[in-house]
Image (cartoon, rainbow, N blue to C red):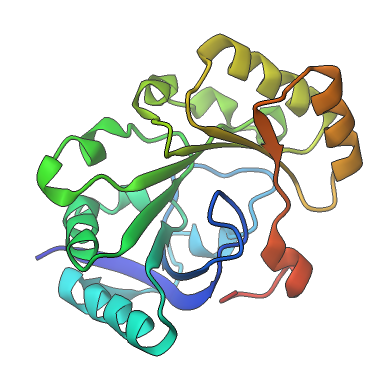
Length: 225
């Protein structure tokens, strides 16, 4: 049975993505292979980040409790970088077997294929970042991942500058992903209105602007929301 380094778990709304506004159980794991300049969960990324060692069965019990108490059917696996948890396919299969919708939030720097190839586990929904210049992590992007994104997945560009917006448009044009595409502002670095004007200028009719609901409802620094 798999073991996982769980930093925290909580029930809240999905603050972003195609399920924004819906309740979800968040399972946040420690550890990340990137150090984005604007990361808002750096506390969970460090080697000495506090965690509780949990097995697959224990995490499934947490998901069952969330369903029984709140009617939650969505489970978001996040971090840190959740794909660094080597037993993640087993957990995805267990949660899917409970009839839950499983979403993995990944940073785009870990190959997706090993986590999607085992048909027994059920196919989780992927929300994948592409790190733009202001993150200082673009060189680590695994562009092979674009071939595995399907119509029910999501590609997210977190933008902190006009240069980021231009680069996002270039990537969209080059790879033409078939999934849903979001542009999201780095909180406090770029105005959403500027991003809307950019979308109009570049005729990005198949792209959505995404604002992080949880940062509008609660303090942006608050954990567990």
